[in-house]
Amino acid sequence: MLSSKNSGVFVSVIAVGCLLTAGTGCSEGVGPAATGAYAVPFVQSTGSCAAQRHDGAYGSVTTTEKLTLFTDGQARENLPFPELNCLVRAEGDGFRAAGSIDDNVSDSLAFDIPNLSPDATRENPSLGSIQFLSPLTSGVYGTPGDVPCEFFIRGEQAVQPGAVWVSFLCPSIRNGASDCAVGDPGMTDPRAGVVVMENCQR
Image (cartoon, one colour):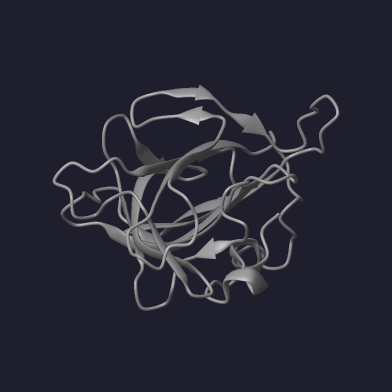
């Protein structure tokens, strides 16, 4: 489960989402339950990265296919219910997108993109934050305030009210003194992280 106290660098995404809904509560509302999936290529970008390189994933999603999405509260044999919360709302020229996918065991991703442009590209990305936990991270890694993650749209991805499907690179995600990354921002065509969430509040 995600806990901001472990990373020391990230404000709770769902707290932000709930505030945006004017106190209605993230689990309230009419409509189908939130669904989502993510893929996170966690890399050792510096010598201070204490966690090993690995691919974190929940469900199955790429830049062109949404193969397996999990649903908030979905029953799983001998496992806790997963918790998925998200908000994707049109604001100004873009979208406020925030959400979290938590399996309530050992895999979690949360993200916050204050102004996601529907035209965001690798060369001109929108900036935001993530929190990431996997069985191999030994704690939550979060985006430091001075090195934001870069979010962009490619392949079949898109953003619209209530849904977001986006790629991201994080030059730095930290847990204490351990400084790692998501993807390799220095590559011309990097293998980036991907997250999709649907049936979100809008």
